[in-house]
Every structure is written in structure tokens, then in C-alpha cells.
Length: 103
Image (cartoon, rainbow, N blue to C red):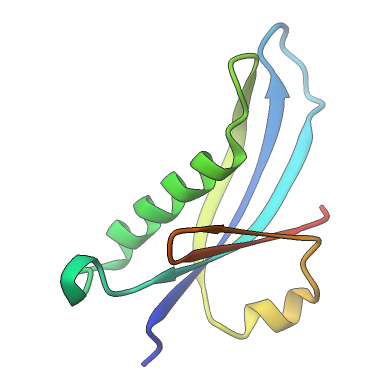
């Protein structure tokens, strides 16, 4: 069993000043450790998914005049990294890695 869980995330960042269907698409894969503080295993995918969403929001930080819309996050297997190919950008937050892909 892997020491990491993997989640894929897609969303759109839009301007809050007016309603628009246009926006910047976001596609990333999150690699998050299964073990929490002091080696305690996280209980379930729900907690990991919530922590992953928080990490992504922290990393994207759309600012006061933008919002994240149409977001979706789901669990994937480790092979998904190789299926998506080379990431255009890599961000690290603590023990988590976020692989960003062109949408």
C-alpha cells in the first residue's frame, strides 16, 4: 500500500466583477501523504480529499477579485501521473506535491 493518496482536480478561475463564462482553467494532480501528524493514518478518503482541496486553494490563491468555480476533485491511482505526462508546473506545500497541467 502506498504512503500517498492521489487526487485529480479541475476548476475554472473567473473574474468576480461581472458574471462571465470565460475563465482560466485549472487541471492538477495532488500527491498527499496518507499519514497525518505523528504517523497517525488518516481515517478515510473524505479527510484526505478535504485536506487536498485546502492545499489546492492555498496554492492557487485566486485573490479578492477572482473566484474558483466549477471545481471537482476525485481520487485516482498513482499511475495517473504517468498517464497525464509531464506537468507544466510543480508546487510543493509541506509534504504535498501539486502537478499542474495545461488544460
